[in-house]
Length: 417
Ligand SMILES: [Mn+2]
Image (cartoon, rainbow, N blue to C red; front, top):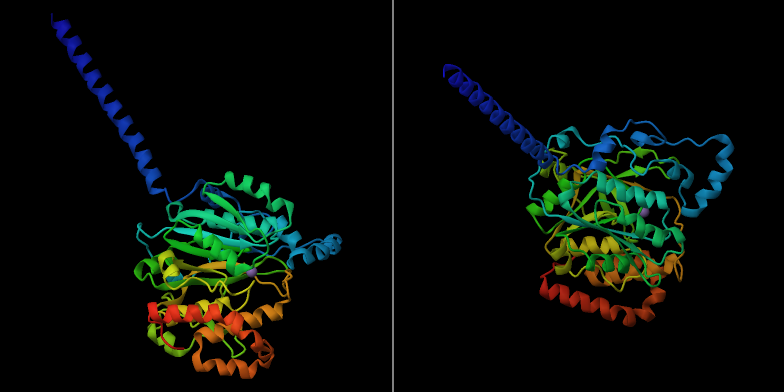
């Protein structure tokens, strides 16, 4: 009898321990899920980047050196895109980059509920490695829940690998990537409009096709738009060398301006803007104009201010047009100094334009002056007498421009220049 009681005690205690074990097991497997949730912003690809050793051509943003006996071939390849294609092709699509942010930026914390964004990238005969490195840098360095999709708009490229091969590659990515095709060469402006019209994210982020996004590039852009949906924000544009693909940090001490030829120019940030920010260089920097290639804008605000002027051709002047439009119609244009994106700056354009570059830019600038600059347009006409020969066409291509002006000024209460 006593032995039976003894047995019962042993059995019950064993049972208790089994239950404790089961509980512990369940508890810890739950916690694995917790860790996953904490990590949800970090994609497997990003983890791979972090754990990768920083060796190989161009890693950590270092310059690529081409061997002497390859120099001739390198020069030949350079002509295709007007950058060192051989160097670009040697660099991993997910190469590592240095963290070039100001120290004050690295400790900033952003809320989890930022608006999400669609990325729109327009390309024309872009190189495979630069285009895909742009895409991978977006995916690897953006919290997944903030990326709605990546839209590539092909402005009638003629290279085979940018066809089906690109679409198939897109299917292997962790973020939905779609390729939209323009039927014929239409230029940056109308291609961007096509991309923008297809977006579903709350914010549209336009990028150039040869960029690399760095750690923490996206959150500060979206946080500023969440704070004020009428702020249109640009990252600091770092320089990726067209010769070596070395990554070099851009300055937060220059901002965008323009001259009376209506060329975009960088100027030193004036003291008054430093004073307005009380000397804190990590705060948004109000800039008169933007370079135009890289910026984020609230999608509904983009529609409200009338998007781009669809009457502008190919490229040129659209960045100033957008800048003036934003400032004059109740918004603000800012450089977010905590956000860094690299861009391959080229010395020459590899593209040819129907009708020639000069004519296109003059026509666009003329529209810009007529719609947004009021009496100040005379400065432009005085300094660019070339534009006079287009006077005869004014009535044709200004009708739609003036319609834009009337609508914008009436509906949006836009200010004068
Ligand atoms: Mn570019």
